[in-house]
Image 1 (cartoon, rainbow over the protein chains, first blue to last red):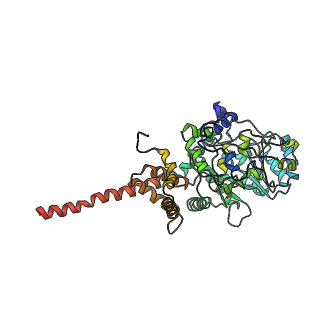
Image 2: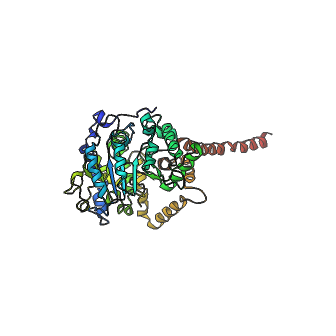
Image 3: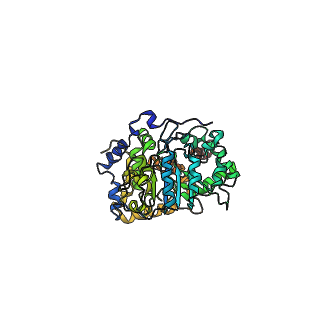
Length: 354
Length: 111
């Protein structure tokens, strides 16, 4: 059994549950006084403002904010109390888009996407579209949370789903600190279940990747070194194998922003992000090749903008009006949280970008 | 002027030393960055050595920097504390080994 780490900001009725309040914080203080440069000015220095999309490669669909976990740093503010769930009607609209998109990757996320009551139907239907890479972001513990989910590994295998799962560390203490007591043990069991049917094994086509994001107010280290350490520890300690590790920087929004402010790390963290700004990462930030769809069908430049309710700056704003050509002719909406994607080797849902 | 000798925010200004002597400052940082690259020792091992030395040198800036660096590299609290003990053991050993000099002197004068 896992024990919830905390409650969502929404449940706590925190002022940070309001995306406008988050944007205010990100635009004021050290950025208003000029102590740190605004993201817009920083990318203007290298001729990238306004930031424009390249060819669409990834369609990321968030099927709901409900989750069986309440991780300390969740940028979605997900949890069992979140009732925002994509309806079957919206899924049908998404399927129309999936059938016709030029994107080569479909990326389902949440919350725990598996908790959407129509999740399996959606995966079955979407897999018929012949998208090259079909990703489900599974938090692992959901596989062990209830009998009705035990067969998820087999279900994923049947539909050739590429599984990407979060794993903050290869030790119990650090993982449970961020994601809740018992999460580590359940995640290990789920990974062993996935390995048992071929996921993550060397030369297997059943792709299993892990996502590492730091457990506190610091940036991730080099992705390749972290992958080496994770692989060694998980193999030696638990006989677990996986393909790639994606190191993702925590963006200063939602529960992570709440944590940064409460622990008095906000300013230092923003300094660290700005100091680690890498101009080479700007050209490949994920918003340049991704469209993010929310549970209620609105369109965003990325999952982070979705959580800040910064809809795409386009005539097309909803999945019901989807038009890829029109959408690709837009300026990407940015704020100071974007420094999270350009720090060091850069960060995206697919890991480093530079 | 600050009323304390150490201000955590000064660590961020470390790079500014180059402004008053660009050649030496640049040489220092080039050397420093080269030292911490992967080599015969891994960058991870070097980070732990740096953390231990930060303590023996009692450098608060270095302790802040290499505690954070260790976390970024996935180094555990247990590993960090063991490294600090290695530094502390060498410091205390370095003091204690002088006891032999004391014994030599006492034996010579009063043996």
